[in-house]
Length: 592
Image (cartoon, rainbow, N blue to C red; front, side, top):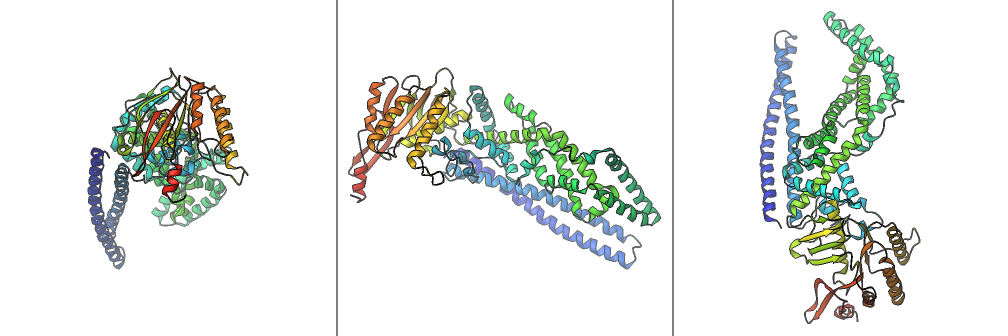
């Protein structure tokens, strides 16, 4: 565990907790003041009734009422800050839990788990997965960006280098990263993003923007205000009442379309304000890398636009109160709000998706920066396009505890393009394949990897590990594996650099058929532009290295039988495995 970083998180928890306690004391005091103000308001209002509203008691009643409303506003602001502080405390507690090897509190991405492919075989999604380890996103856009990037790592060197530089810069901005995460975790989005990105058919709502409604939207509120003042001045409200009823009747002609617009944004004023805060946080942060500066340009107007939408939604929501009948009759308030939203949508519709994508990408970068910050011993790999290869020293499994992990050196490339890895059960073959695959994914995300050095060429990852029978498709385990291998061969024909990871292929048939089929598969794979690792129990496949010297190489993981039991060192070495443990384990467990 990184003790220095754990100390930083603990100090943050203590600071935020102290601030939270301070603000809670303020809230208690404000609640007491509000009670006093309300009692004063009731007292002076009662006095006004007793003297039939003569004298100054009504003014004395209004003053505490105004102060009471100000206290309500102050309390709401403090409660918002308290929720943010509570999130920041949880975020720092979560980081300490992760440093101690406990699961991340944020979602594990199991909903993004595909039916097959490297994301399944390498544990990219689900509990204790790479997604789970990296995840520091709170918005739906952030979750989508992280899952999409994990399933489609970068293939271009320039993209990888940009991300590496951005991650390094963001790793030093702990406060920014955590505050942005806290605000995104406060979002209660539902289907909001989908709704906002959905195009509003302008032709359908053109009625609200025709000449008649445009003139009415200008004249009616002015007329209504004039009649209101005249009614108060003359103390005669007959014309005001008739005018209001007539206004509601006119509004009824466009109410269906207005209701549709209201449904599009209703009751989300707080959410839109949260979006505005998130965008503004990104805009206000000082960045130096051109890619991060470009992200800021992409959302230059997003904060102000969502702040405006938040206010508009709050006003539109007034239609739900008793006041709604009055303001709609006198000022056609629903019409004004509907037309205002149409203008907002027309001005921002084309930008909304880009804004959310940019915010999601910043959350993705923050996740990778937090990963780098928490794993200071991991290194940023070197991306090369000169030679299709991977060269790693002291490489370990990124999902395992660093202190307890066994590391291995590993080189594969122009020569020795295919490694046959043999070993007994539980010796570490499958784990090593995942170690290579996961570190390559991290490298192609622009993130640091678990190694002392790591030089790689960007490539696709093609895998075949384990398969299950499918009753729905009426496919057996063996046929499911064959379909997977067929897909890999078809993909290799595209001449795109690929890393092929195969774990104990052809296990669904007899040993002779398995050996012959695997041997023929290996001899076909070596003719494609790929580097491959094939883990197997079949030590007889080792003879292929002699037939294809310089292309195929044998590596193995050994185990040692002793009086104390079975010992694994999980260290990869050259050659074909010599030890077997199945019979030993069966005897040890009393099976035979």
